[in-house]
Image (spheres, rainbow, N blue to C red):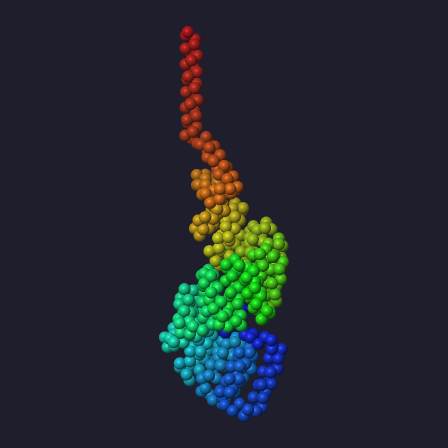
Amino acid sequence: MSKYPELAIKKICAQRKTLLLPVSLLLLFALLISPANASTVSEWVASGNDMLEEGDYEGALNAFDYAISLHQTHPAAWLGKGDAYYHLGNYEEAVTAYDKALLYNPDSMGAYAGKADSLIRLGMYDEAWDIYDEATAMGGDDAQIWYRKGRILYEFSQYGESLEAYDTSLSIDPGFVYSYSGKGYSLLEMNRYSEALDNFESAIELNEDYLVAWVGKGDALYGLGLYEDAINAYDHAISEDSEYASAWSGKGYCLYEMEKYEQSIDAFNEAISIEPDYVNALSGKGFALFALGDYEKAIEVFDAAIEADSTYAKAWAGRGDAYSELGFLEDALSSYERSVELFAGDVDVLYNLGRVLYDLGRYEEALEAFGSVIEVDPDHSLALVGQGYSLYELEEYDEALEAFEDALVIDSEDEGAIGGKEMTETQLRMGWVRSPFSIAVILLAFSALVIYFVYRKKKQDTE
């Protein structure tokens, strides 16, 4: 589910959900049989906008089409038609409609933004970027266009620049609730959870019915480790919209962190029942099953997540964990390698990759993996221990001893490091005894003793 209202089907009238379709059909029927009932194009456009708000996109499209049949150059009708096509997932037709809106009103910021959003959905990112640059140059005092530019910067993972765009939007309109929420999500990606929480709460103060902000608040509280408070935020969203999948998933992760694994699975199942291909929830369920020791079932769920999105690194990592516990090291290795290909910054996955490589006897590759962990986190004691054992197997005893000693500086009670150090020191002592130099010294000393005893015997004989 999108974090942004215009990228997901709105459910703000969920309490009237059972009546929505019949009402929209009756309205459309009335419009079709009695056009005179809507005496102006503006009334048709207003009716279409109402349907957009209620999530009746087919009805809205019909209303805007009728408005255009009455007034073919009405920019607001073309803009609404573009919005309807956008929400129906017909992005090419949406672009065509937005172009018509811009033809009849070149200053329509909504048409610029809608066209850019549609181009993003079509994978035409450069074209979308150019449109936002052009729009912000023309509409420098339009809060919405700066908000939308912030959103596309967010989509491009340019979180710092997205914050600047959202701040510009808020400087124009301090009450623009979407910019507070957008800013909150950018701050979440930057792990600035307290600031994110402040922005989500500002959005809620402006509009307590804005569920996107409630879910964002839950995410921020989760990041701060305040799991009970996060669940309260998610539950608020769920109480208003029981089909809010990301709220259920967020609640599942909180319960997981609280080690309430069965309950977390229930929450993830709710999210999955709403969105069967929701990879975040599928992956969370897989980790909960793993925590319960049900490794085979966990693999099935991780596989489902990967089938839904083969680029989801966490699912590959979880799959590797489960295969590792079952003793299928080659399967675990291929999963970890794929996870690292997708995202190389997860030290836990890199460590597990090194551990499996070590267990497979591939010590040089294991050493490289452990080294990658230490580059990201120099105080990762387990990686230092793994590095020490890999070096030991490669008979690099001096370097192995150094790695074990570094690990003990971080954790003086690490049994693996203590045992590794003792084992390595023993090898170093034995190694000195077996070295050519030590053998020569021993032979020289032995020869000296022989000469001494021969000399003493001869001296005793002469006496």
